[in-house]
Structure formats: C-alpha cells, structure tokens
Image (cartoon, rainbow, N blue to C red; front, side, top):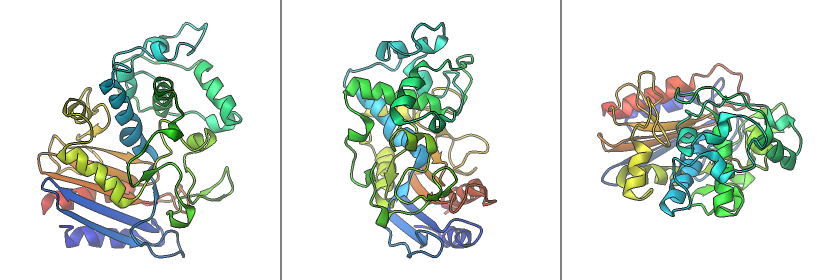
Length: 329
C-alpha cells in the first residue's frame, strides 16, 4: 500500500544533511494499514524500531487543543462563538482591546488578528509567563484575514483549563499520545541553543517548554501507531461526534477548517489530493493528512530539526512528494 517510489523518497531523505529518522503510516477507508520506518533516533544513534515517541509540535493544535475545544462544546461547557472574555474574564484587564471580544471560533481558524509568536520563554518562570500572557498588551489586527498564530492557541489552552478545571497536562489522552514520553524511546530533535543540550523526550518548542512542557500550541508527543490512529478516526469516523467532526474537516474560512488546513495551492499534502482533503504540519517535521474523497489518510513523522533547524533540508518538498505518490497509486 506504500508505493515503492514513496519508500525510495523516504530512504533518500534520511541521512547526512537531512533528518535522522522518518516514519510513514497510511490507512484506507476500509481499514487497511501500512507503515514504514527508516533511520535512527538520532544521527549515530539506535535504529528505529517503530514504537518510538515523536515530538508532534504543532500537531498539538488539531489533535489535542482544537479537538478538546470541540469536545467541550459537545459537553455544553462553551460555544464556539463565545467571546474570550466569557471564559477568561481577567484577560487584558483594564485595557481597551478587541481581543476580549474575539471568539473561540476565530482563534481556532487563526482569524482573531493575533500575531504568530512571541519570545515567551525569555519572560521568566512558568508562573510569570502565565500571568503576564493574559495581561500583555498584544497588538491585535483586524478580525477575518487568516494569520497563523501560536498565541491564539495558547489562549485556547487557557480556556480549556478554565472550563475543565484542570491543567492541560492532566487531560486524558488516548493510547499512543502523551505529554511525558520516555526519553529512552524518543526520537531526538534539536541541539537547543537556549537549553544548550540535545533535546530527547522534552518539548522542542521553547514557549511550550517554558510553560512546563505543555501549552495549547505544542507539547504533544505521539508514536507512529498512535498518530495514525487519529488519522484513521478522522477518515472513518469516531474522532468526535458526527456534527463536530464535520466541522473539524469542513472549511470555515479560506484554506482553514476549525482544526486543519484545507487543500489549497502549495498545500503540504501535495497537489494531487482531492479538493476535500485537509491536514496539518508540525515544526519538528511532522504532519497528518486526510483525503476523504480518495478514502486515504496518512502520517509522516520526521525529526527535520535534528541536529539544527537551520539546515537546508526541504521538508515541504518531501511532504508534497509523499502526498503525490500516495495519491497516484
């Protein structure tokens, strides 16, 4: 089910100048599965066995945060069109800002007008960052245009903590997903300039790491089988209730669903996917895609930031090539 050409692409990508590891999982609408693992947990390290943990990075957004927001809506704890201030009344206290009235739906679809990123990890300890984050006078642009934002998902994480009355780290996760991987069975990511060590089993994203390892935008780890199980449930049903799952995969704004990026020109899933396809990627080199029309879903996990994010490896080119070869079979 994994074409020979796809396997050739992965084997050629792994090694000096590229990631040390790659894992591909494919599942069809009738439940057929196929997987391939190539490489080592780090350059010069042990060969992959297939059961390792991978830092999923921004796959945390759809697979955890957006899904949990939709689950909270299913449970009647919030509505997608609630303003932020309804759940975070202390947000931007004594400030005149449109942020308090921006909705959960706008945060989910990256249309709330928030910027992409800030150096939260330079602010101090986790408690200081959490307190300052809600009071920082963020520059907020007009609502509507898609503006990818980690900051918006950090806010969604805080909303989830309030409505569930528990920290994100204590949310239940399905088999094959965790916030606390065993470092001895985890694929390494970057030699971090901030932490001055090779990261293995700890969150690569600096801001999520500074917040204790978990935030709304990053911090989730998954095995190949665990992440592929999420793709299968998205494809075959059961990821959420039928109504919520449809919203998670249906465009809400140009190129965005409530949880994923919808197929569009230059899309990470390749140009041969159907117009109904959707997916998401992670900075560490991860990705998940679902093409309901073709009855196909797949997961590609790499550690493309190993040993540094500043290399020249073309992860987007590999993602598109894998998607195209799978669609062409």
